[in-house]
Length: 116
Image 1 (cartoon, rainbow, N blue to C red):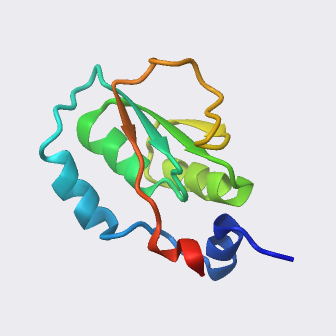
Image 2: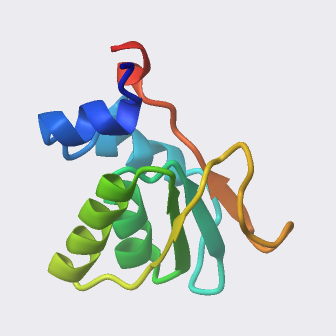
């Protein structure tokens, strides 16, 4: 049986797994125009670390998308713990179950742990 990345991360109880972590997210977003009216899709949100940061920092509308139910559960818990509002959607980034062109920015960071 081959485990998917989300299974591995949830088993290891990883809180954030993208390259550069939240520091890289912050550095990248400094060069992006985001305001309260922005609609952002965090594709492959994992535990929702970047989604929570976006919602708290910019007050924008965030949709957190991931295919793994445990990652989405952890994202919901993070949003509740940090008092953050974000839509949570289960789905695959290869076939996003959302309306085309409904976001101003799609945020996608591939994990370094992909090949574990």
